[in-house]
Length: 151
Image 1 (cartoon, rainbow, N blue to C red):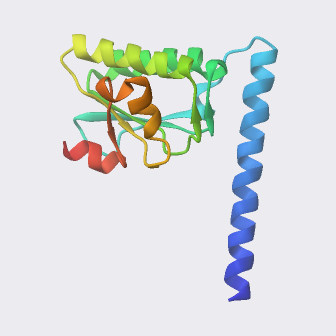
Image 2 (image 1 turned 90 degrees about the vertical axis):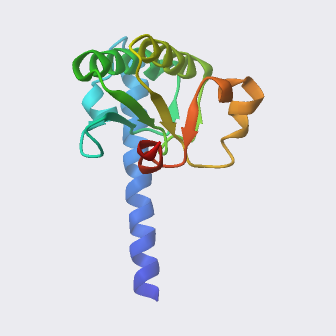
């Protein structure tokens, strides 16, 4: 039992260190006026379905600092793939209005292409923000990527 607890504590410490490293990298690049290197923070995953592109957001806070780089990355994925799109926000604990604005732009772009746009965002604690802001009328939200693909 103690060994399992030690492994869990080590795993949690490693995840915290990785999040901290990513946060410093994001903030440092923003302060220096540099764009984010998308490969470290956004990941396109093709293994889920041939009908969907999936972009996984790999940081805790999706804010103005990340919005511009993410928008360029998302637009490139839409242009290159031409498929339905799922944005996996399950690693994010916070999404600000500027990042939501980029997501809304993605919805509009895909709608013009007659494609679907889904969010995978699993915490019930986070979902009230969608209804409070009216974003529940803009986005279709599922708890997991797999669940979104089924629809």
